[in-house]
Image (cartoon, rainbow, N blue to C red; front, side, top):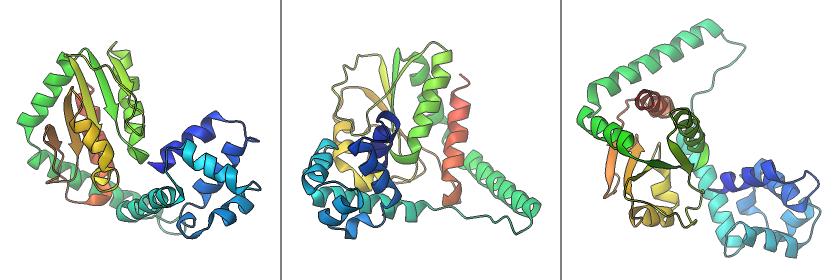
Length: 244
């Protein structure tokens, strides 16, 4: 996903570098990029059209159209998963109680509907694996980092896969790949990644709150009754399986 690529550059490059400047501009104006010409982007970043073209290609895009499509898909994904906003000029306690009660209601729904046999199989595969690979894009990549940090304390080797899933991983027989797609957006916006995951020679589990996705490998569906709480519920399940 585009924002993952931009954040890697922002976190790695000097603030004065051309790549940093362009990345910062794109991430701050990502909703406008699909309607901007290459000239407008170059002028806004105080650089040339050729530099913008080289930059886009360095991110793995064939051309400007592909780059704009990825920006558009990211913005569309945000609109689909935006959470309810709270306001400081309203009663903080009332909002907190409402938020907590809705979250508890969603947790109870998941308890009542989660397939415990599937969860048991997932935990068993995780425990039996020698190495664990984790993949997600967008904001879900924070869950990958969390899993890696927690499993490292248990001396379980854990690798976060690159966001484009293009690196050549040498999967072994006892490895496990955990693929996180909270709302199934990867299936809509990055079918190439799905193809590579499905064809990777490694035992794989998909964790998602989206039902009825086509995925021929292992599938841990985490049911919820409120999409606004999908992130929280999936993190709760992750917290649970990391206890083993």
